[in-house]
Amino acid sequence: MSPSRSSSWLTPLILSVLFACTANGDHHLSVRYYDETCPSAQHIVHSVMASKVAADQAIAPAVLRLFFHDCFINGCDGSVLLDDGTPFFESEKAAEPNDSLRGFDVIDEIKSHLEHSCPATVSCADILALASRDAVALLGGPAWSVQLGRKDSRGADRDAAENDLPSPHANLTGLIAAFAEHGLDARDMVALSGAHTVGTARCVHYKARVYGREEGGRADIDPSFAELRRQTCQGDGDDAAAPFDEQTPMRFDNAYYKDLVARRGLLTSDQALYGCGGPLDHLVEMYSKDGEAFAYDFAKAMVKMGDIPPPPGMPVEVRLKCSMVNYRRTNRK
Ligand code: HEM
Ligand SMILES: *[C@@H]1O[C@H](CO)[C@@H](O)[C@H](O)[C@H]1NC(C)=O
Ligand SMILES: *[C@@H]1O[C@H](CO)[C@@H](O)[C@H](O)[C@H]1NC(C)=O
Figure 1: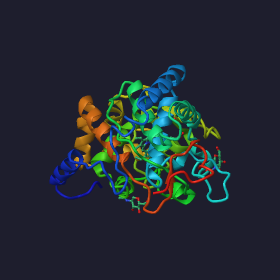
Figure 2: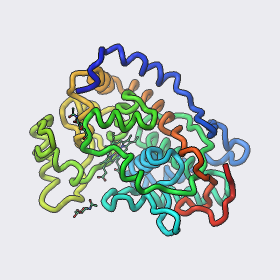
Figure 3: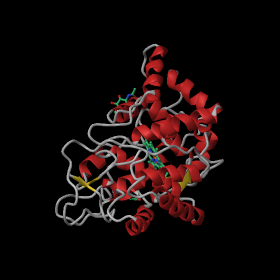
């Protein structure tokens, strides 16, 4: 079911990851973007994240997921952070009532510290990129240099929010296509999915899988795992959350891939990465054995995902509050 070409297709993918270009269109990102204008930016983001995650670890996966959603809808432009309440757009926050994105308050708090130290300088999109890196590192995952200089969009796109995100019921073909639309290849997709080594999903998203009601009817699941998860997913308990990774639910390690090999992936879209007999199976097996290789590829793919630009012509600014566009346009591009 994975692309049925010969396995030599993996080689160009590897090369394209290694030589991924980090500048994109007219948004020139750089690691040193705030060196002059806000030298304490990274320190401020990190210290708020560290104290928040120390108080509640679940903040870390929530923030990481926010960044993924931000980047997949209209590019990494902070639009996921906008509230409803202007006449111009319907917010992405409201796209799916049951979507349960969390972590907005942490980003708002980081922003208010930054506005105090360096007013109107650090974009919300950059805050999210930095906070996600810190979230991963605080849970024991890799750290990387974050490319900076994103601007915040003055609009949000609810329709895109509903249509551009991959579904938890997607098959491998659908997942590859969803990532390809954003310039991410199959290898990036497999590495990025390793984010599901931390955090939780709610019953509504894994119910069909653990009850064997998935379309296509492939029972690609360890029966004892299915039984375990049915216990946390019964009747109208659609909101009951279960960890993606049973053993180390809040540790950013390569256990996600071990779970997939054991057919203990939580979502249909997780398990879809493994078991089709193609080259991606080898990749999953490799990550399951080699945590360092996973950490390296994950960091690389996060930089690449973080480079998805907003659509051309989108008006941008550095927002003063992450939940609302500035009243006056402060910056035009
Ligand atoms: C491959 C396609 C993906 C699908 C279909 C998907 C879907 C989902 C779903 C359904 C949930 C559970 C939401 C809930 O029930 O509360 C979830 C959680 C999560 N996702 Fe993904 N996701 C994907 C890729 C990613 C990527 C690329 C990242 C980050 C790099 C990511 C990070 C997370 C995190 C960290 C959580 C846990 C959130 C928490 O515990 O608060 N996901 N995802
Ligand atoms: C994958 O999903 C798509 C869209 O849901 C569907 O059209 C396609 O037939 C599926 N492919 C396989 C191989 O099951
Ligand atoms: C949200 O979940 C509830 C049950 O938990 C369900 O009744 C409702 O239809 C869901 N809404 C959407 C938009 O999926």
